[in-house]
Image 1 (tube, one colour):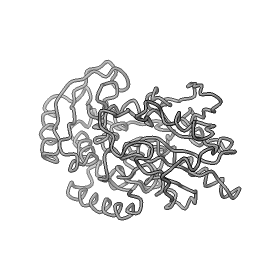
Image 2 (cartoon, helix red, strand yellow):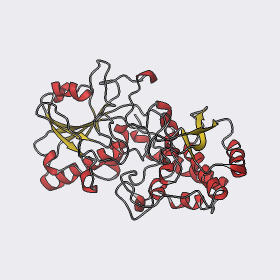
Image 3 (cartoon, one colour):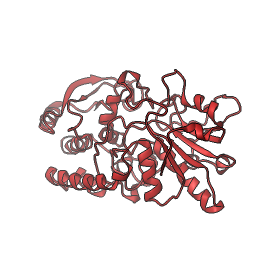
Length: 385
């Protein structure tokens, strides 16, 4: 890993870029527009959701069309799994690949997985030909800081929503996580990180937040996402189709004495670190569209202490006990994989899946988290900058 404090040193290089609307500057322009004046920008790689976050989750970007001079547009989220990997031709005749895209601090978020797939292809290209473009990461702050949550993803559960060995909430910046991939997986690509502040300020005020994808509308969403993303693998609404996705959640069947008992159990969990507001909501699209859902708004009051993943696992375990005939985990294709249900890909850990099945206590889960999170903090120490 190398650091670069002046990208003008690479002026004139032939370049490709992975980016979207989250890379937006104080001058009122998108970063790729700035780079087109510095580099010979030949290709824009599109991540999931498109260049301007036009598309909802798991919607192919094959139909998207943009016109930016002579730049080639390469969609890396199409209808087939093969589309996730950049075509080899798109990596030829370029000097560097720029990664300038915001992350939200959770391993499920697909932008840095797309960057990882590009990194892998550069590694293969270097082994085959002896050379590969520079991998230039324009770093940006982790919006939820350096706190970590969870356990390493076991390789058998690896997918587009999780790279092996990474925790649910990883605590790294894009430059740190991609450098970890490069060195830990022995990819041997020439990774160069441009520190925070060269392109955008060290601290982005919340009022300048640009939603990196359609269902991360605010920075607050990022604090609950490390846990609440698990709801994608269930028949609960995770709030898509509302103005507060992942903070708003529920289902039509959360009713009766079981709901009262659920309220009681949740109120005793991680006391003082969050508040739950009971509510009813009507999703305008996605799960339970047009049906009134009973549920909650999750309001984090102590972000440095609240453990989103623990909350969500505890919540799902209670649903399994209180609503066994109504609550369920989804089956079918999820992010191009059909051999495992979505909840397994998202949880990514046999011990945690056993907890959901009622095989482990809360105290044992807490000890497990403490061990795995401590180990991860030691592992990533060289990549925290």
